[in-house]
Amino acid sequence: MTLKGKNIAILIAPRGTEEPEFVQPKQAVEQAGGTITVIGLEAGEAMTNDSDLDPGGSYKVDRMVADVSVDDFDCLIIPGGTVGADKLRADDDAVAFVGAFLEQKKPVGAICHGPWLLVEAGVVADRKLTSYPTLQTDIENAGGNWIDQEVVVDEGLVTSRNPDDLPAFCTKLVEEFAEGRH
Image (tube, rainbow, N blue to C red; front, side):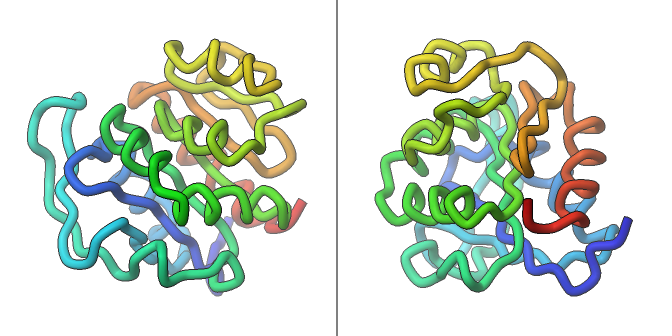
């Protein structure tokens, strides 16, 4: 599978995105030939967390979410992290950006707490997806069909539960991103 020529956005929140859920999908996409743009809420650097509480790494934010358009990208990755996902879903620009991908039927991958943004964007109704288990009620209340599996794919939407699911998530993410629009 090659992602050569694909422009892929990955979201990062200041002090809150889960380190492995940011790094591993980013690396998988880059290894498959995709071009990654790190999209954040603030310019400069964004720090990740490990297991929600421990400090992770520092990553350069390429562009701010307020300054980008879904038209600039082919696909989107939404990493988890309780704090990061909560910060992102509280940002109107981030929510609109995420919603636009699903509305335009562009592939999206979301892991762990990342699906909170999908709920906030109002795009989970009648969709099959998974997430960290504590989001099950939120997803079901928003009309989604929550499934407890390591990876769930529904018309270009790839979701997984937690960092343990990263190998399956990254593999399926690259496959779906390679296929393009759905």
